[in-house]
Length: 206
Image (cartoon, rainbow, N blue to C red):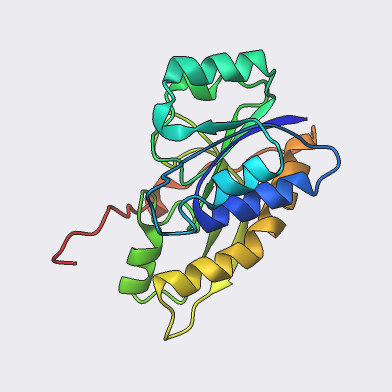
């Protein structure tokens, strides 16, 4: 299976490493952010690692939707896998790969859809969070669920400590996700709208 990865930050790096450990997977391209002026090593972590491994590495900031469709078709990408990609993929992009597009979201969907789930999980005093792989559809984090893993939270957890927990567990989620996608009998689970909630970017008052 030829996979295109649209990934950022530390969890994105662990996703890339998990995919490359699967001998049945070929990494056709990596689309990620690149900010040479940034002092945050995690901001460029996927970019630096992808170059080191000699993957086709494409800078997210300069990419148009037409460019991305062109790369997918030219490289014959079977599946896109996204995490922390900064733009919502339109239908004419996420439907191009033969097996569709999967997003790795840092919450137990359908709870805490949106850009800042970990902040709101902690602010609301939740006892657990998790990671969810789901197919991308026209909504925001609304597509059918492929796999999930649960993460217990401690009273002293912060956003950075939760991210570290996710980095340790996301590889397990990727294994389950790819196994399910390859299983012809697997059917993803629709999200229950009555349980859904949204996690917007926090404001100063938050």
